[in-house]
Length: 247
Image (cartoon, rainbow, N blue to C red; front, top):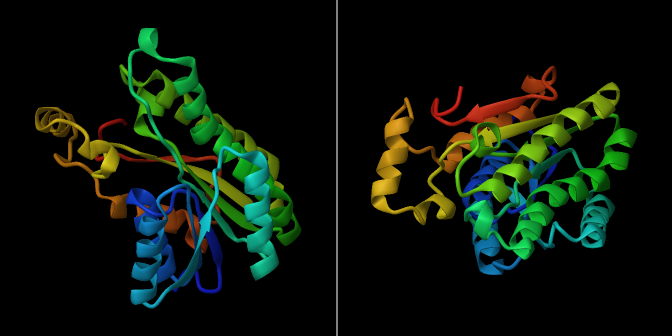
């Protein structure tokens, strides 16, 4: 197993891409900490699924936009396991709408969760990974950060910031053998895309060369690769998992 004896933390790990990633990393041998904000039931269900497939893990409630709460969460993991090998920054949210109608409070929520949350988690793990002289950080951004999307200026801006953060931090920590990469999913069949009307879903499919929406497992497979030694010479990269929607 590629991730045997590794300790991984997945933010927003209870549903969708986060859940699929927790299951995949556990199957690869990692002990997975499944972070959630409000949906404890979904987090428990994900942990049960991990355990049913022979994996091990634990759930952790924390608001990633809260700097001090993240510090406390990371310290708890390190105190319990003595290390943290893999951080997956997956927690995110969107409030769609045209820029002219976007409330300041909605903009702030997206930036605080999607971008500041990544900063909070990366900042909290940096010293530990530097002491270990090894680590993997995988940040989940989005195809809209690369291509833009009308009605998603806040979401696209927050996710584009993650790309800049990823590349800059990769340059800061590369000498310590810490690899930081990003994964940019396209339209993945999760709760977020299930809100689309059938006609809108079909319009999206028509734009995707592979002719289908992605599955959470498609993203999880790429995350598992980046977390492994197979990706030991990759850092500062953005891997698109989008079926060819953006090239």
